[in-house]
Length: 52
Image 1: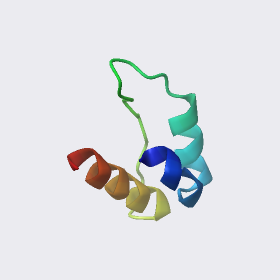
Image 2: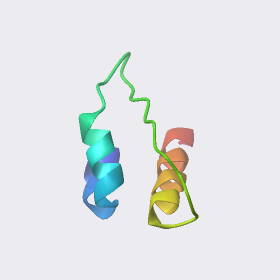
Image 3: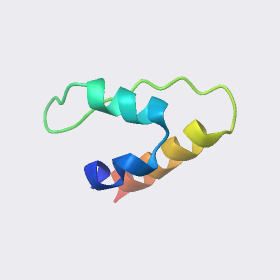
C-alpha cells in the first residue's frame, strides 16, 4: 500500500522509507517532526495506513 502512495510523500519521508530496512515484514521509521508541516501530514497518512 505505502509503495503505491510513496510518490505522493515529501522527498524527506520518501527517502527515510526507502532507506529503512524491513524486519518481520514491517518498517520502523524514525522521522523527526518539528512543525505541523508536510512531513507531519505524511506521518499521519502513514499511521492511517498502519491502522488499516
